[in-house]
Length: 72
Length: 370
Image (cartoon, rainbow over all chains, first blue to last red):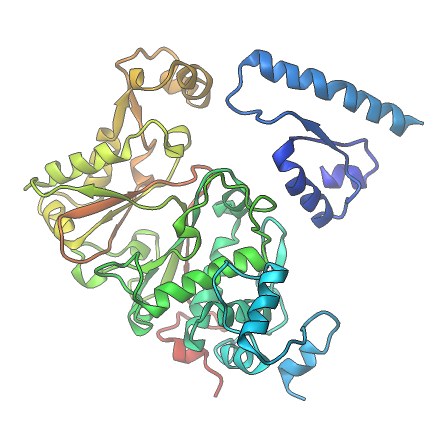
């Protein structure tokens, strides 16, 4: 993901709340401290398909907005 | 100016602190440079003494430690070794363990950052284990021996201070584990009826070696009644097969530890290879013991070919391949064995202790600067 971002692609990592700090630390480690982290509700594992889809429904517009902002 | 002093003159390479045990420990706690226990202050003199057993350039990384991917230079490792209470002669083995655990097959990033409670377990084989008095007998996994306690602790210090395994930041383990303080033992080769673990893993018998495993704590196997190989192995197999183990869901490499008494009974009937095959075949649970969701969302997805049409009585294997089961003899007197499940998404790494010229080291004295 970091390499894709360095190549100029629109990138983001989707992660649940407790993993945001890990994501931020990894982004710094790999030289892309501004890598967007799109937060979804925790947990993702051990959920029904409906709840997983609900998390995707939350993340998709965030990512669409990111793509639009990148295009401007 | 000494060699180390020149290196420490670089900006950020060293910190100044009052020459006071309590003040230095307060500073370490404030910085988060500790496992929570008091540390030995890593003064220039102590770090220099540690590095007398290093035959590599002191400032050249030997590995990068996940998840921070921090550079593990001998100087940094030495400072952590001092803090953990290591004796200088332990340093070559600590360096080897750090190198081994950072090799790709172990998946240290996963082991460090997972919500699972695994930690790198180090099994030491060969003459250096005896030279350093690494406990392989009674209470081998418990307290009482400086080498076990401090080399294992130094590994944890490296994982935290260089690798960034900070709780809720780089180490996301839901529970953690006592094994995250120290997790290092030797194999009891003298009381084993078989070739030792490092020979099984392809090294010469006279090599000194470490085998690193991304492992849970050991689970005890009590069997005071079985008099046969089949009996002991049946009890071990029953302990291996549990519905909540990561190993069930991966092509895992669990470790089976037999104390010498169990090993002797098993060796009376089976070779190690035969014992592995028996365990693989018998460490099973009927599929109906797993939850419906785990069957549909895990077992029938991960091992589609094996379980696609399986019913509730079909056996689910704790280990997919017999050759993936590692067996070591550890411990003192008593009718016990132990099962060490793993993180699952990890492969054990075995490496021999070698001097800088690539020759097998017979003694840590070969690393000492004259």
